[in-house]
Image 1 (cartoon, rainbow, N blue to C red):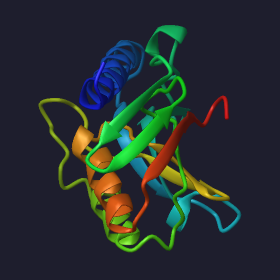
Image 2 (cartoon, rainbow, N blue to C red):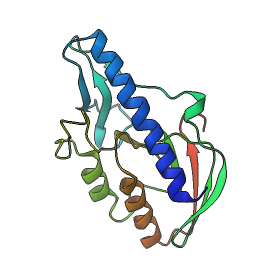
Image 3 (spheres, rainbow, N blue to C red):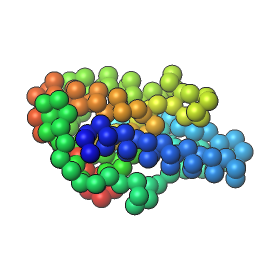
Length: 177
C-alpha cells in the first residue's frame, strides 16, 4: 500500500464510522448537531484551547464516535516527497506525528484553516464539514484528530514539515502511544 492509499483508507474509514454514528444518533435524538466547536478552559491541553466534538445532542451531551479494531491501518514505512515516514497502526482521528512542535513555521495558519471553527466548509448535504477536530502537543509530537478533514489537511502539514527540513517522521496512534 502506498502512502496516499493509506491516507485514503484511514480517512474513508473514519468518515464511514462518523456518518453511520451520526445517522444512528439522529434516529435516537432530535436536534443532533454534527461537529460543534468549543473553546475550552485554560486547563485544557488542546492547542489554542479549541476543540471540535463529533456530535452534540439536544440535551448537551457530547458524542465521540470511537474506532473499532477494523479501523486501524497496518504498520508500515512510506514516503511522501522527500519525507520518510514510519507508521504504527493508526486511525484518522488520533494520529501523533513526531517530531512536530507548535513553533513549526506555518503551523498556526495551517491549524486555523483546517480547524475551521467558523464552519466555512460545512456541507449541509453531507451533514458535516471538512475540518480537523483537535491538536494536542505532547513533547515533540503533535497528536491530531483529523476529523472530517480531507487528505489535504495531512499533506499540507507534511509540506510544512518538509519546508522545515524534517526528513523522517514517525506516526503513532494517540490512543495506544
